[in-house]
Image (cartoon, rainbow, N blue to C red):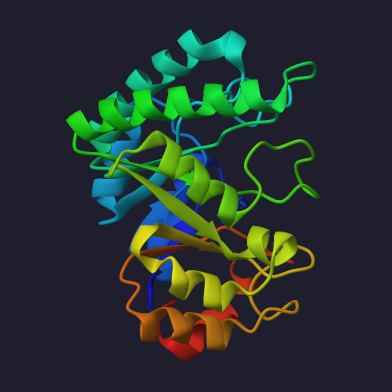
Length: 260
């Protein structure tokens, strides 16, 4: 069974964010991830991790103004300096929290920006981030996201992510494979994971449709999690789903694995 991390941006939202660390630990999780830590002093989060014996698994580079609709800024040629400043901020947090991998949300392509220019901007920004993060001992990963949930998002398929990785040309850039997003965009998730295991650094899950917990939709997660074991995936699997009811009621799918 792969190592499972609670995504605190989606799970345990019944309590405030700082209290979700304790809730995750009590539920049996050993690792946590979330979208962003930047609204809280890094010392506060570090204390929560230590108090609850949790490993910090993943968070994202600053992604612009999330409340205003930003979903990353790496593809925006007008915001490269903001992107670079965000890399430094993320490194500062990661070094305190013991976080060894950071995800880059490439963002929604701005209106009027040609596709080629957006791609060139992403490649240049990722080259910068990959080098800076490598110097700090941190892995950079990128994630393809479905266009149903985020219309206009730049990075949408595994093939495109592989193309971008090749263009960046850094061994410090790897892929995050989100089963939910890729089930919507391309399917064939088991074969894809096996074919590209060497570049997949992190996996996330949710069922489809609805983005709820495994067992609520069409994806055979009993098979998929066993498959990850079978092909030798040894990273974390982030539980990035929206509980259909409450977080606690939705954890029943994990009990057969004696994980939670």
